[in-house]
Amino acid sequence: MSEAADTLRALAATLEQRKGADPDTSYVARLHHKGLDAILKKVGEEATEAVVAAKGGDREQIVYETADLWFHTLVMLSASDVPVDAVLAELERRAGRSGIEEKAARGE
Image 1 (cartoon, rainbow, N blue to C red):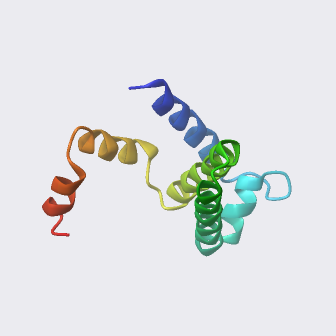
Image 2 (image 1 turned 90 degrees about the vertical axis):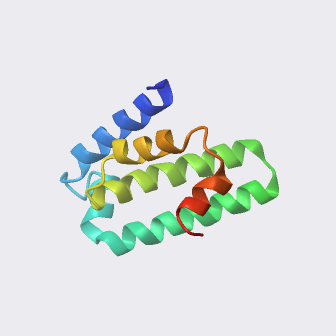
């Protein structure tokens, strides 16, 4: 696996450790304490901010907002008990495959 996958795994492990921490001292624990709906709302907000940044064309903002989106997506995966390796495996499965073929295989 790549260095990027290793970074995602390490971050996911840290987020999993912080999941049950004190919500007064851990942002991740605070999100989990608020529940899945609050986490999903945050993912939606971050996705919107990433889109706005991309529309604006500022590379630095795009990177910053995408990092926020990925971070909160990892929190969502943790809350849903979905390991990051499941997503990495799905991306690996799709690698080198046409997006058109992928959609056709799913009946889209």
